Image (cartoon, one colour):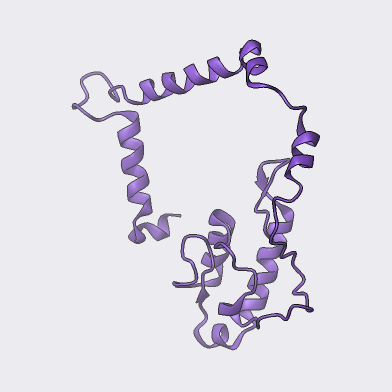
Length: 169
């Protein structure tokens, strides 16, 4: 359940969705849930602090993923596991041990000069600045000073980030 996004399809992975289902089933079978009919939301946003309904927790896990380092569901009834015992998940702590091999498998090593010669680095660089410049232009002709696509987008994100807008998601 560690890999939320499938690198091949760039979508939420089937393994992660299965993990969400397994987690929800496990958490809903606990006495705490049966008593309150809510559970602590372990998403990256709520971080096991807020009590939520099952459907909200499912949606949050899908949208935001699981909070970091929450492998043993201690806030949801799972006991700590011993060193010799497995909880069924891969808890490898050295995620970077095979990086050189993976990097070679993905693409042959290129030097920075060869990338610049191919003309890849410069167009990307220019397009970022062009996009930023376009985003800072007035929203429409005659628009009040300081209201641009970028400022409007940041205001909208700020509105959605408020706790009172939870039902909008």
